[in-house]
Amino acid sequence: MATDVVNAEHKATCPHCLHQWRQGVKNITENNYYQSLENRNDIQTARFQRKLLERFNAIASIITSNTKAILEVGCAEGDLGAMVKDKFDVQYDGVEISKDALSAKQKLDHVFNDNTASIKDQKYDLILSFHVLEHIEDIAFEIKQWHRLLTVTGTIIVEVPNKAGHSLLEHDNNAEHLHQFSLQSLSCLLGQEGLAVQSATIGHFESAVYNDSLRLVAKPALTTEQKRQAILNNFKQKLPHSFAVYGVGGDFQNYIHPYIQSLPITFLLDSSEKQWGRVVADMRVQKYNADQHGNLPILIASIRYKEEIIAHLNQLGISDDRIITLDEIYDAAP
Picture 1 (cartoon, rainbow, N blue to C red):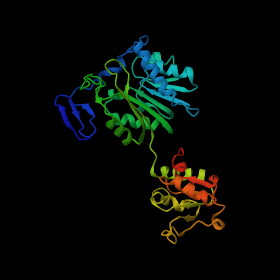
Picture 2: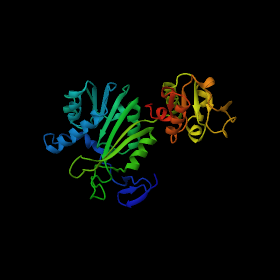
Picture 3: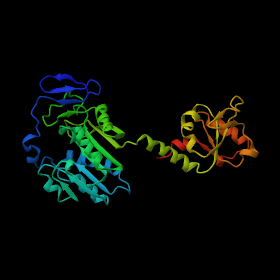
Picture 4: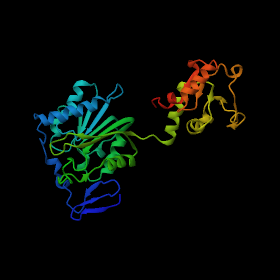
């Protein structure tokens, strides 16, 4: 990130993503500061219960039957994990370097009283971090550890103050907070560590002075080859055997032609005489012929004009059960 000094004494900012971080100040994490803390949450208060319930609902919406193990980075006294374990049959571990780890150990399956880099030989389907990342100096290294501990299909939920954390505050002057995030900066940081953002929301409540928090949900980013295979799998699910393609226009070029060598396409069809006879991938574009093409499924290679093409194919005597659209291929879950 390029820097542009906001406050020469202790803050800098990236002019591109607006991320801010402290410079030239003593790191508050020195001298075991966090290790000495305890009972920082007023767990009986309405404000604590408010954020706890909201976070629980967010987690519950993501948990599936495949969610077996959860890690919460900065689990405090373990109350969120206890709520989750009460409703779901999951392993719930925590990371907590403060004295609150003693309380959390009574509620969770395992609590690591050290940083995430110390965790070995563990994989988690869901990793949670609520208002922790802004306290960590090397945030890229921390996110890298999350990715290392995440299963290939796992999910990360991370929440931090949105900029200053309050719409009326220009800067977050909390000395514990070494970073001030924007949507762009947190998305960029996750992306640099191989994580793809699935959703981003603002306005989440942490406290009265941090009533605007940024929450991102991310998963491991697919490689180019993984994306290609996911598309091919979608084709295979809908069209496992030989099929014909109807239309060789722009959508064909963009969404079918890149995969044509890996698909069981036997005929290319089009209604335009200008296309007849054209050779594409060693196949000659033809006019539909019921005797020659009458038993094959037909993939419509147009999104914009699919309804008109379906009506045209129906007039040719082709039933709907033989017709597949590009929407069905690309809307399919990977």
